[in-house]
Length: 122
Length: 106
Image (cartoon, rainbow over all chains, first blue to last red; front, side, top):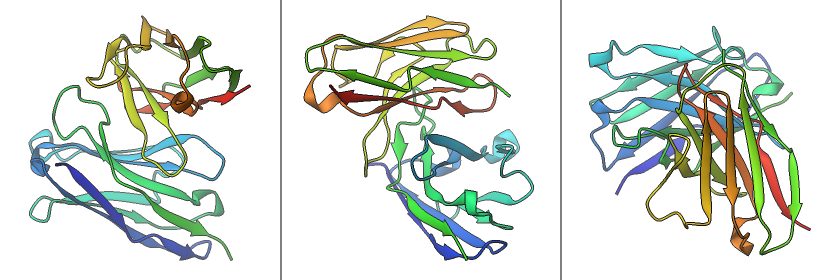
């Protein structure tokens, strides 16, 4: 069974930093592109960052609102993907989900974690 | 950057009625579009992928159509458990989600 478990959310002041983790099991992590998606209160889903597998260069992509402030990384030995959130703004307040297709058809976001809440407030 | 625009923002319908949700892309995404259902406190659930293919286990009342820039999700006869927010998502060029359509009970 595929499992994704996020952790690391919490309350942080504007300008502060936070590090999120997503521990996974039940699939071959090193074969799977991993993505973070967020949902701000009362808003829709917004993709945040994506990291490809090492054989695809380990390339990272970021949504415009977070580019230069957030960093996605992965540790294939720990089956874990990370999201470093720096220079946080109040508008970054959201539930952050990690998600993946687990490198399986249909190659869309079938698997999701339960989410971790990040609150940016003074 | 591809922008997905969903309409309407809210759809108020009664159980048994037909729901038609629209998703328009700012440029062609081919058929690389999916639909998700999202309920409060739950993770989103993939319903339709590649514009028209139903995920195994998803009821037949859900169907998707379209290609290029215009897509539709149809729920043929709303069941009580179908009242939720629905998102389209493209993976043709990076990623993007639409703003969502809330289907609520009239």
